[in-house]
Picture 1: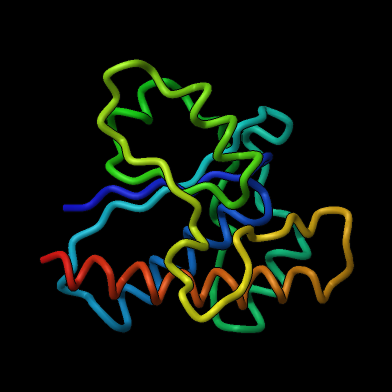
Picture 2: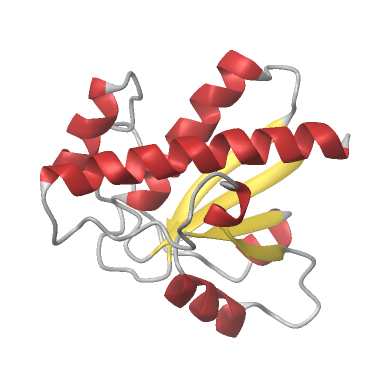
Length: 156
């Protein structure tokens, strides 16, 4: 089983969207690929809160339900519980590297490394943006999720 953790800043927009998109695409396209999927934030700003209502609305339009998720902050144990910790942007990746305990086996990467057809390195934070920015997050997380599923299938 591959254990994947998505990480953004507050865990209310990008990472819960990625968690739900991967979970649901996996169920549709590769139900035999065993995975544990979760999300967290590097900050504790929204701990216990549901995803941003704009994220929920955008996801629902595409058939993804993220309303049952709750924000949490990454903890030291996550670096042992998860095989792959995927950051939404370079700042989160830098923060994760600073938090990673010595000897941790987790691999840290940018989520967009798996979206080979995209020209972006980061999933941009839509929090201060407009509705369209939440759609962009979905476009990018769908592309990267498909790439991640393909990479994990190839690795089997």
